Length: 472
Image 1 (cartoon, rainbow, N blue to C red):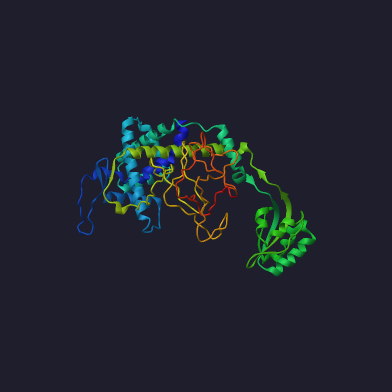
Image 2 (spheres, rainbow, N blue to C red):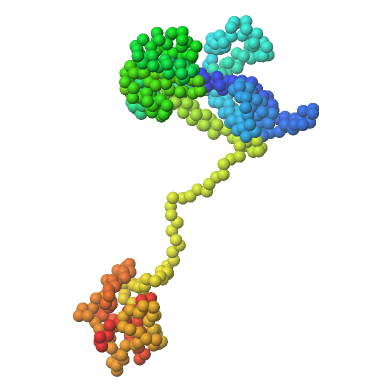
């Protein structure tokens, strides 16, 4: 298992080694050279950040960026890319510092044979062993320094391998599910056709050749080989070429090829200027899929690599999160995206008080709030006249409000055989209104409104309803 992981993870460690082999020594040896200034006085070196209490100088960060650019062979860099390069270099430096601490904590053993094996692998990249050692000598790197750096690289590899060794094995169900989900995209050959194809540079020659091949399509190669056509031939397919039905249907100049019969010669199709094609249909092909057994191993390896990359990303995040980072100069790094204020999912309830809040009145009358005890209408000494709308409802009214006839004995509104009072609950319920007003039903003993010497007109809403009297 470790050997398998090591084989797949080597490219990761090579990238780490290339990025930091030449730059990390500067990080550890720079010390506190704040204020270092070249002789020309144009640049003042300064600390841009601190990692675990150790300051990182601007010159260190730029060295890492330059090494990365050179090793990655990056040619085009815009001014907008610079902050992101600084950020990537700084993040990698933080990871490298924490990875070194993790390696030291594990006390891994690396044999001399393992180091020699790595050196031999490096030497195999050169034409000869002499060329390899000459390259080492020209770079100014001593062999003992190289062996020391390779020892450290192997320790890093083993640290990562040990971390990934506990990953779950990709199951057969996962491989099968991926195949079923992606076979139409990655493992299928679409429906299409096979054609013998001839390309020519002259449309007149193409027309003449097409007519001649149509008379004897089985011997078309002999016809094409005649000298009269050789100067205009651009190419001849050595074997039938596949054209998908979808590609042909999307190209108006080639869509006619779909409907050709087997052995039929199509018309001359202009592909571009001085490029004309003659096609002879040879076979219809239905959509097919690559069998699962042929691709299952490739799918498994791909899923394992994906799983390992995810685990490595998590390992990197965990290590980086351990570092205590303090940024001194934010101007060299990308500007952070503005943070949108978080909104809570819980709705904000309106503030309530112990005193009931009267509902806002509209054109529709609102009945007074009722409680467990029936509330009698408020009586004042001054009569309250009903508000008259443009269209009066009930008995015809005049400019002077019409008051009910008063006798010595107060006249009560006509009561139906059975007084219907609204059912009283804890939640106020408005009585159902009809064309004929219904007196509220009173529980227990009916309570009549108190009558004063001065008649009191009932308070009405926007549409007044006159109470029914005995005269009616």
